Every structure is written in C-alpha cells, then in structure tokens.
Length: 136
Image (tube, rainbow, N blue to C red):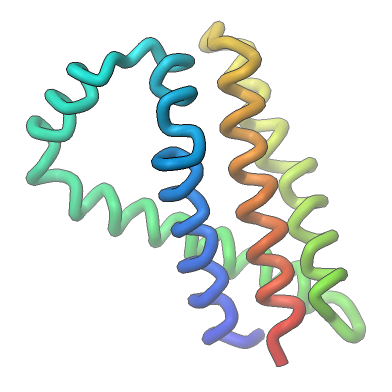
C-alpha cells in the first residue's frame, strides 16, 4: 500500500467534509439539524477548547477510512483510479450508507439529512479511491 497516497486521500476527503458542511451545504445541514445561526455561534464559543481535539480525532477517523479503503483497493491485481473509485463506491454502499440509514431510521431525522450526509461520504470515498488507486 502507498502510505503517501493514503495520507493525501485522507487530507482530500477531510477537505471535502469542510467544504460540504461549510460553504456548499452548511446552511442546509444547519436547517435540517434544527440549529440556528445563533446556536451555532454559541456552540463554537463553548467548544473552542475542544475543537482541536475534535478536528484531530475526525482526521484520524478519515485516515483510518483511507487506510481500510487502500487495503480493499490493493486486493485488485492491478489497481487504478477507476477501480479505486469503484471500491470507494462499493464500500460506501455496503458500510457507510447502511449505517447512516439505520441511524436515520432510529433517530427519526429527516430523509434529506440522511441524503446530505450519505452523499458527503460517497463523494469522499470515491475521491479517496481515485487517489489511492491512481497513485503510482
């Protein structure tokens, strides 16, 4: 496995998350979660000390996901970006989408929130797979 590609893939997926829940769909996510701008700002102030740890743990979780995806991609005889993307989509379908769906069902959240969160992970895993599979 190419450890540099794994780290780069994790960084890319982490940036996708920042974009996804920030400038791209941050307002929709807040609305679906029932969070107001005031509550978000208050939460940021309250969690300011915890934020570096939360970001680090979040990145380590993304790095673990990239590592496991790299293992799946490495099982191919001659991995490439397309195979990596397929492996990412398959991993999303078999693991991430299903876990998120169960959470959605039991937490009684709006289906549009599930779709937003699930789509984020689909994009992240496909991107990670392309990087890991295509890196030579």
